[in-house]
Image (cartoon, rainbow, N blue to C red; front, side):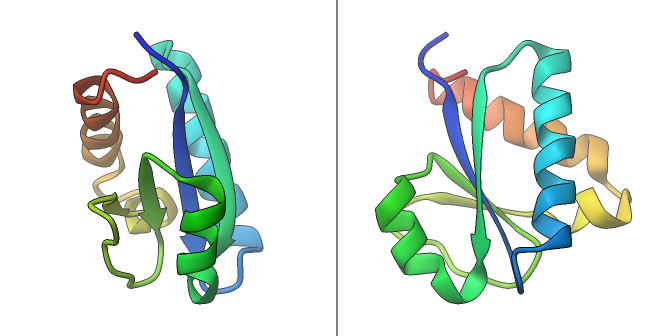
Length: 101
């Protein structure tokens, strides 16, 4: 496996929801023995945060758009827990496909 995958986690205010999602992804990455780095921010700052962090993927709990071919995953299952395992599988499969983690 390569370098750590950089995951930008975004929500409306970048307070509680991003922190919860980051902790869940970090715990799951540890369980799967995948190296990740999480960064957090507000959807309103999407473009500047992508420029700053250069993430490998984005997990957003609010609606956003793809940019520069950066894969965007809906983070809603991390909050609702409905579909959470599938989201984990999809995210970590993507990381593996990219040769990261």
